[in-house]
Image 1 (cartoon, rainbow, N blue to C red):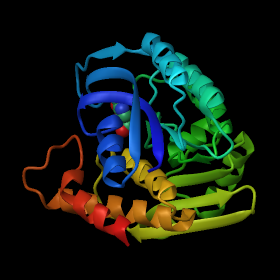
Image 2: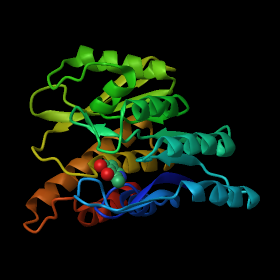
Image 3: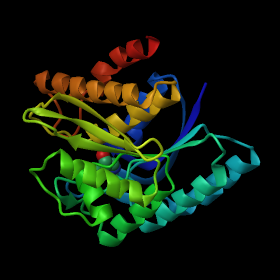
Image 4: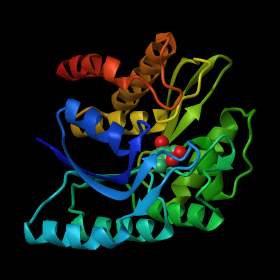
Length: 277
Ligand code: PXL
């Protein structure tokens, strides 16, 4: 069984980061090791959330793993929370990377043209440095703009997206996948660029007019899980996009849906089925 290390916060309530990555990757048949960067009472879209930073625990934990000679097939980072955590993640890449370890970075920090409350431009620049060390990066358009000093646009064409992908490639990652990309009216999905082959790839779904927290984490977790289970990049992106879209659809139909996250628990059995094919 493949083993992945995921480095991100635990938001105790809120269905994001580790509380999505762990159940989703486990359901996909990947052994998932977690490294919590911080414990929050909820994700940061709630008012009055508490945070306990766990930076001082990271090095002792990873030093123990080193003594136990633990190896990872992939390392996947999400919401990190502070400049110090990004630096620690870079150290972990350096210490645990083997020739075939997949480094997958979701530079979680912004959406809809704005940085999340905890972050500033210095953090965005540091995330760009983290992306440089990755094999695959999965920013949304806002995050890509902050990391490449590009003007954020609500309305854009394919040239804007391919330009942004080229700039992301300039950061140094091998494969850049932009999420939340709409290439025509009523559609949304992802578009990627492989620096090594010079190839672009896109996948589009019908746009569902709803925004939920944690859907980026869902997309990333399924995408990296599918790659680890042997899918090629295009089919990993299709699975992740279709699964995320279906989960949003199901959530919208639930009359008692919580506002803070999606009902991925309802759609997990279908994901397990998809992995059997
Ligand atoms: O879903 C990304 C995410 C993860 N963790 C925390 C967050 C967010 C997005 O806001 O606040 C704590």
